[in-house]
Length: 331
Ligand code: TRP
Image (cartoon, rainbow, N blue to C red; front, side, top):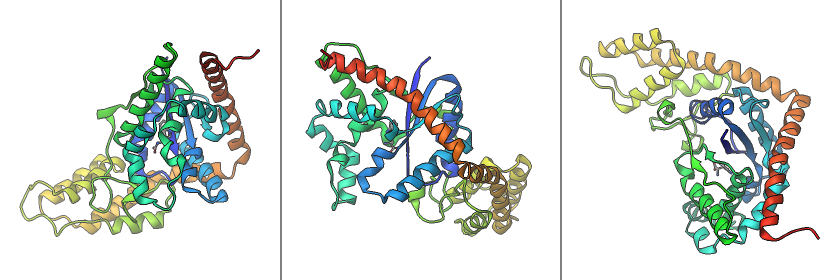
């Protein structure tokens, strides 16, 4: 069975775009591979979050993934900082990561532009830490999007370099992985093609949103002035609303509004009301599950402990072998 590793940012709540993208991917993968999913809390330290915020966010993210159906019995789900082996491998990998290649990394250049007041070494070596996350389990596959391609390329680079320096065939080459065509891309509510939390207020519907918040956001969704010809092609902003309906509404509802659009009798207000209600119905069970899990500290504790234990087993083995390869042997 192939090993899959994926790091989850410890910032922000899950939105419908995450659910229909990455999460559905994870749900499928967890039964077909040896999966390690972890919350990347070390990574988040580059921005110096306040300690209680950090803790709350890690818990929230963990709980949301569990609420979506990540099964701690099928996959290994853990908190990155529970695995000190990652920190050790990160140190060792730093010895064969070159400053030049780290400085050339697109995400680093972007970060120094955005956070010019805090260009710390952790930012520079972010790709090394990510490589350690992946190499620690000698993973074959990493389910990441386009924005992480370069980081993954660097992971391959570091792993291969290690193999070369020590003349071993130790680390496999991890490849980006997703179910591609089966994934549905969820548009945002602001007329932009993509749902995302950084796209601006009101663009994303979160699984943890209240019904009130969802209605408010959907009613504000961007539309146009309406169709001007029978059976015309829908402009992107309208097509986006139908795509959202596709994700959460019944086929009958969708064809009803489709016909209304084609007949030029559509009232966007009605469509939005329906869409909002369908989104409320879709997200409500997630919200309930999240709330239930948040109040069940015993269960969360158990999941985290069990995940750390399973991940340790794999991490300890890798670090032990890497130490031996490098020559850090016991006397
Ligand atoms: N850099 C990833 C992101 O921003 C998160 C991440 C950290 C990750 N370590 C990882 C993803 C290891 C995959 C594998 O989304």
